[in-house]
Image (cartoon, rainbow over all chains, first blue to last red; front, top):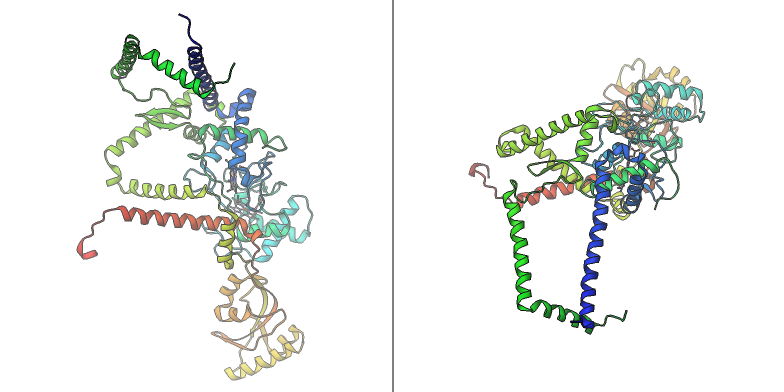
Length: 254
Length: 310
């Protein structure tokens, strides 16, 4: 028998539904497969695989815009009022910028309250009677702090009164104990998140003597949230790949 | 193709229904469904672990009695153990690490079976710390609004001030005069000479005064308070530059303070203090949430206390 026009419509509808479901399944499996590959591949090997890295970056952009840009800025430029670091540019607080290291920072955060977060040290407040909560460090005097600020500016190639710089040098390497965290050469320590004091990149303030004084006198302890449980493992890894790649590029991201 | 009007759609669905309402056809569809269902049930019944997940999800590296070992934890462990880039860690090293983690998971599961948290004090304190941190971590992810931060700042303005600094001369008699009244009048005369503008060195020499040595150059308020003592510091903090105090009696005799430079604490503007405001406000929120959590647990708990301690 010849099917009636209504029957044709019915068959067409059923076929379209099955096709759409099939396409959705294929698409979903495809995304899932790419996600699986992203997670299964060694984090540090992903940047060498352009297709996978591109998948990760495309995925990361909207997540970055939604979850991170509020503090780190739409162009990864950071926010010196919050001490949210610039993420573009290849100077890292924690580790050397390997994807696996960034992923670790994102998963558990920095001073986030997560027991596995990065939280080995913070910047003491040298103008307070008890500068550091974790162990005893003696306070400094106002002149010590001014001198050591000038010493840091001098390390950045910005001159300064030689006598004050010499006194600051002494404070840095003896009483202040700065070398203990920031290193003898003031290049910082990626194991504990002590910033490189010679680098142009600044976490806080405008880099002037006054803003250095502020950090040294009253202390610093920036916090980045832990994202595990809030973002999927695939999104966290995608962000890590994205940040690793963007660290060496410049320009708008979202 | 012609537009799918609502009536044609309804007709099509009715047509499909009519097609499957045919007695033998409906029986066949029913039978096919039953067979597929039975087959699925049979497969899951006769495979050892029933309907449990048999594939390891991509975000995990292993499932131990269905409990995941997270890939991120595994990577962190590898990093901690070998301190080299991940791609330089050999498969054998990876398996060794994974075996350790599986061993840990099995022991943890066994510990729970044995109800260790009920008996082992170390396990108990670790659990308490972990729950506290869990509560804290949930709060940290919430970014406080600018309005919240400003409210906090206004309410705690005193905490966002610079530490005051001062530099002064604290003068005492090198050899104290015979009687306290004599000391007082000599000190008054010295003070008057200083206020009149005579040079410090000359006045010190003329009256036999010396620096007490309690303060050493410019100091922060907190240090000056410790060095000068509560009484002298209380006077010093109110002095303007160049001011000379009347004689001040302290436990060790008469003092005269000459202020060189006094910079009292200055409140920090919100913009300058924002990073610290954010930290403090977040910490207060965490403490608040932790307290609320405890209150909630107490509230829903059934706690019986022996009469003597009620």
